[in-house]
Image (tube, rainbow, N blue to C red):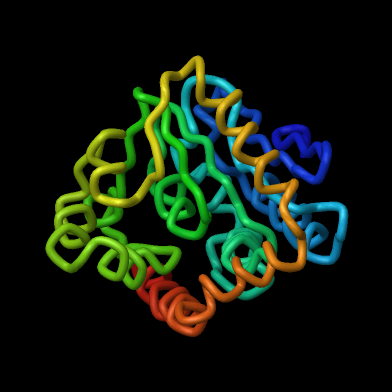
Length: 230
């Protein structure tokens, strides 16, 4: 997809959402391309670290709903499911660089990254209930685990925006930087990681995720049932 640019430099694989004119809304084609790149990276010794970012002033506004209606039936080979599984089971550390809005899956995918850096203008939103949907991408499992029940309930039941500082304070992000600094500093961190012993890096990432893997997969399955009934 020309909406996703993929580049590898010194062990850092950059996956860039490049549809700024549509606020980087994710089409089925974009999901497929991201899934393919992530699955390909898993078996590549050249990839040490993955950076997920986007062009323009929005990280992503979430699903391209019109395109989603072309394949509303959720199954394992569905592009969105392939993407979800591929990111959740990525073997390399994943760094997200977020500016502007991160809405819906744009917010929930951050829970599956290892390091999250936000621009000062970034905000997250989990608006599922107002759309008549239940939460997706294991957010109903990971948010209470990461933040505790009451904060997770606030984010998922109200569906209000959460700003960059609050997101960092609550532990959804590592740092908040100026928009100018985001890309440079984010890639600096990616390069620092890419220079580390690769086997130890991959093993440490795997161990960090180990205790949640089953829960994430079960939650994704349970949520899809609700999503399909939405």
